[in-house]
Image (cartoon, rainbow, N blue to C red; front, side, top):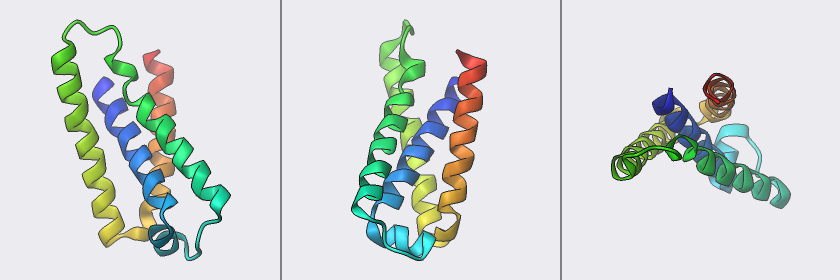
Length: 110
C-alpha cells in the first residue's frame, strides 16, 4: 500500500505543478491560469509532496525508505512528463484520479 500511496502522491503533486505553469495549463484546459489559481495549485502540489513522505515515518530502514521514495517520486514525474507531452488534455483527469486514489489509500492505511 505504501508504494501505491507514494507514487500516486507524486503523480498528483507533479500534475498540479505542471498545471500551475501557464503553458501546460493552457494546453490542458485551453486558458491561462490566474495568479491566484497558480498559487493554489503550487500549494496543493507542495502538500501532495509532503503527503508522499507519510509512509516513511516509523520505518526502521531509513536509508532504503528514502531511496525507494526517490525512485517512486521519479516514477510519478516521468508519468506526468509523458502525459504533458503526448496527452496534455488528460492531465486534469489524471490528477483527479490520483487524488481520489490517495484519499482511498489513506483511509485504508491510516
